Image 1 (tube, one colour):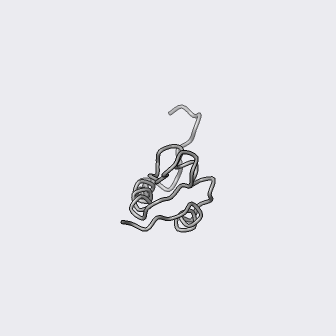
Image 2 (cartoon, helix red, strand yellow):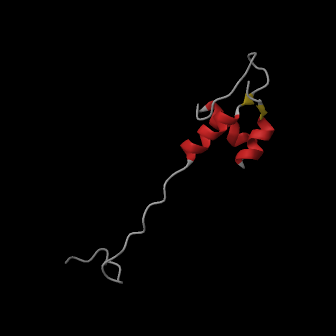
Image 3 (cartoon, rainbow, N blue to C red):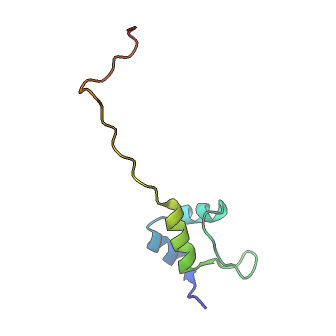
Length: 77
């Protein structure tokens, strides 16, 4: 069985606040364990890794302009 991680520990591992962690949990972005309704909430390491993977975005390549000048706005060509 995996070690269960508390809310505070999970927030520290992810580098986010408890409010952000609770919002992600409420939005269904992160999986959690709760044995009793309105009881303590725990997270697993696998659940945290899945959340990190879903929250990671690839960097977009920088757009290269053909000229050094920006196009004029509002002027007809």
